[in-house]
Length: 202
Image (cartoon, rainbow, N blue to C red):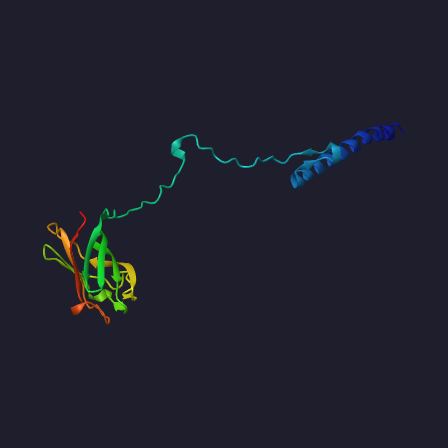
């Protein structure tokens, strides 16, 4: 009989130790699976904490990359030269006056005024206008770029510009500009008129 009481006294601690071992084992399993040990307010988070990545800060000028601006190349335009004056010639009832000459990039531009004092219309087409300089160079007016109305109404005045292609030689100082092919009932005899000694700007 005393033997059986001794067995009962030793069985209690063994059961308690077994229960505690089971609890510890469950806690270990929980920690492995979820990373958290315990329940509610008595839980412990065993998961590692991570911080957001921080962008590196350049600490010297060598760490900064810059893109150089595009290189722009331009051809310098030749400086414009201008001669302003009054070079005039009259034949019959038609008067032509040159008032300005521009020279730039190998092109001569002649600004002119034509006055028709007759009672009939006259035609002064661009294609028949030409020039010769005092060094023997010749030039023709450009039909595509010249700005000239061509038709001069009776008792009327027109203004415009003739563009001559070609680079005058260094020896050339003046131009003789011929307005040929003038048409009209009261056009000058021979249908031509020349304005002499127009200055070439230098």
